Length: 71
Length: 244
Image 1 (cartoon, rainbow over the protein chains, first blue to last red):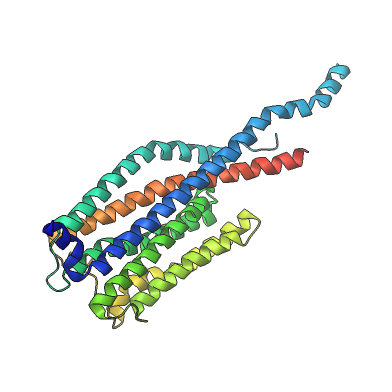
Image 2: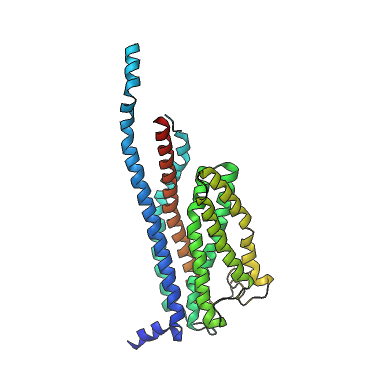
């Protein structure tokens, strides 16, 4: 127990040592979370965009008809 | 079709290579971080002058290294993007900027937390600290420049020029402790005569440096992938508008 207390006390510098580690952890974790969230959002948007793409030839259908009529 | 598939050839290969690297760099980050934190907090002895505050060094110095390294990476990537029009280079620089800004911010904050007990002040306007603050502003300016253009090709050019001009700050930061009088201690790891600190303290420092580097690589892979996909999305949206 005493050993643990000494460890966390950091020779009296606890209020300088632990905040350094804490802020590093907070900033880096926040960076990971925001980067992953952005990737997920873009991936999802791209998926729905690409899912729509097969619908495109249908929109061009009138042109295809025109070709058939020509031949 | 309105979309030139050739444009994707290079980013496609890039995505394939990086997704193969990703699990390894992720595992390496976790292992190195665990090893660095363990040796730094439990194995390394307190410094004979600075006591336990020396442990701040294990998060302070690697963060500063990363701030410099990532900026240099961005400058090189920007040059490649400007000269060879490499499609992934600009996006890599853009993706790296927030990571570098975070590391630079962390080196300033942890340095402040170390300066107060050791120097008796949170901040001094000396060469090392001021040039590091300028580095943070360069990162923020670079990020702002990307966001202030609607046309990504104009934005990438402007941002690349800023990155290249700002790179002059990197050697200034490195040598600031030798060129000017400063409270900041001089270099003790990357010196001409080799490291000047004991291996019990040097080892955790180097492990943390490698851990931060692996962290950067892992995060960069995620962020560049997001940038490449976002550009693909933008091209698809534009071509959709054209075809309507």
